[in-house]
Image (tube, rainbow, N blue to C red; front, side):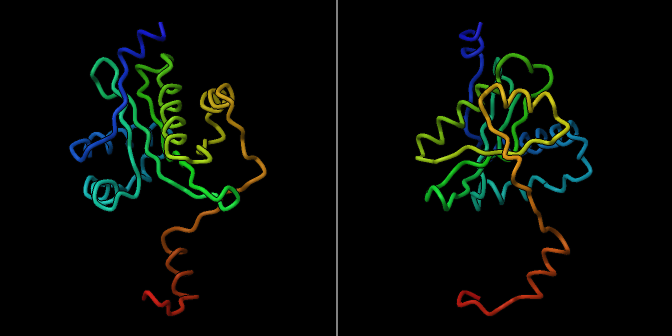
Length: 172
């Protein structure tokens, strides 16, 4: 069965022509996470970020020739390891093909990519209420980093901090 799924499931790096599809998949994911109102990304923003500035990468999973999954990731860096890691921002499998092992294949692909790129880690976040995903990750051997708390500055607070303590840098 798994061999048949592997024959029918292909993973490829996204191209600029996939920009509309990527946004569609992001919106599907946001709807699933009950966060659709927070999506402000547009095709233009994604194109600039992914294909011009290359700030992140996307892989597309196709089952029987149809796009059914995506993962968006980028490199982070561990000062303790002294090397880069891969940070998985989003992984999404369309509901109609869940339960076929496609998520495991996508994560295994990213793990292999991390090894090929000499990365020390593959990391991601998961919403606490998403019990199915949490169970899935534990089954794969992932460890929850419960002793860490994520902090975020965005929007107005980000701008306030930048303005309040701005110093003249040599590159300004």
